[in-house]
Image 1 (spheres, rainbow, N blue to C red):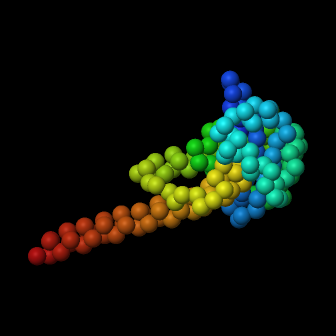
Image 2 (cartoon, one colour; image 1 turned 180 degrees about the vertical axis):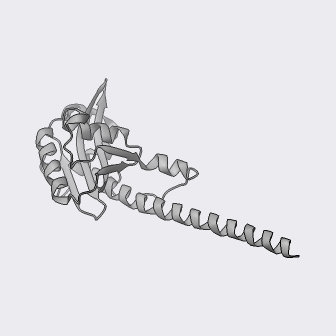
Image 3 (tube, rainbow, N blue to C red; image 1 turned 90 degrees about the vertical axis):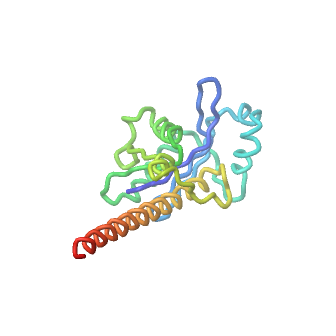
Length: 187
């Protein structure tokens, strides 16, 4: 089972605090939560967070903030409802912090329930391995954790299609070289 994850967070003096978490399943089901456990005054004092992240938290339809322990319970229940028997994995763009904050919801990595993704893959690393390709830009909602997770899902699909196309082109080039070699031998 594949999930796409994004978080927004406050990072100050060695303390990284979850602000919001968005997760989207491969089939498009969505989970979004806002934490009540981060230092709201410190976040409000941060100009970048105030401009880019905090406005999303009070947008129409945004969920009520809840403690991280409740986010962990709700996320576990959501993942359990989507279980398809396959090992869950999470994908994120440059997502080391995202995965760290996911694990931190449960205290430690080893405490993550089996139906919540413990396997982490990075979309940016995949793009680099394909020749540092530029992926399509996000249309809207940047720095809203749920919108960013949706974009991660779209980025995964784009990278998979790019990789398939690249591999198909390689096979076609190789086939052409083989046919040229066969023609040369026949002459």
